[in-house]
Image (cartoon, rainbow, N blue to C red):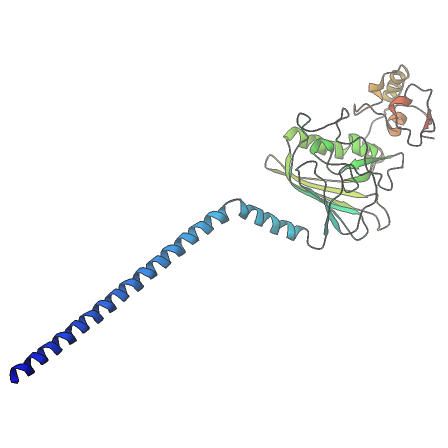
Length: 315
């Protein structure tokens, strides 16, 4: 009986020991499993983090930054798309329009009166007549927008960013500008400097007006960078020759005018077409000594623009 009791006690002890061992093993196994799961999660987190960094550094980041930048630039303005060759002279108020030809991004802003007041471009990219459909005149379009004021004989349809610098010809890039200023003055010098430099960066034009009723600017201020040098050009929308004359800075040009007129009377357009674009403005013809109007039977007529097709220019 005693022997049987000892046997039962030994069996019970063995069962209890086996049970404890299984519990310990199970706990140990569970602990290892938890540790392994944590390691796996950390590894996955690291992998995801590395993939995210790669995505951020890649192109999407540049696009997001650019979008945010434009959102800041365009705050308070409605983004609007206008065909580059639209001849309408009307502008919407408080809008921003891309006036760069092709893929260029040149942004033009209007105020509440529809006046063109600001143009910006991170980079000015020159016209490329080898890869772009440039006309024989050197322009993208055959004509420019008819902004109110350009009908005046002394005003040109002046580009803020010229065709040669990649600008289009709609009303958001055109202001009525003094013909001499546009063709031979500070505006022309600025455009020439940018062309010779192969382009420009950080371009900004600020255009001001004498009042809120007109679309004819009174003043221009251009800021841009050429080959690392910041340039600021500022000038009024006036005939620079007349301004210089009023300041006593010009010499007597009577002999030069007589010479030009003499050559022009013989059919030499080069002395009249001072910018060499193949067309003669009323201002250029007058400067060469011709009296208005120029009629259709005059040799100079074919080089001039007869807007109303009545056979007379400058009537």
